[in-house]
Image (cartoon, rainbow, N blue to C red; front, side, top):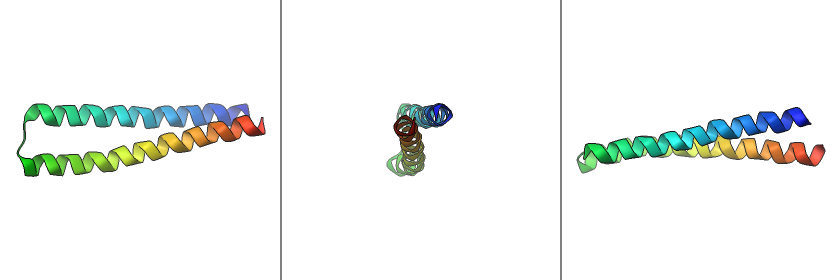
Length: 71
């Protein structure tokens, strides 16, 4: 079960990297000072990316918890 813990930790790190990427994308968009419509379009794409990253991170953490319980 130790392998499950390490795989879950790696998946969680991938999700965390995605979340950090979302923060960077929003910071870049704010720096460009886009119009409201352009900003809304860009942020809608980031929201989808953010939710996917959160799901990936949560699944990785669930794998870690299951690995700990089974180990």
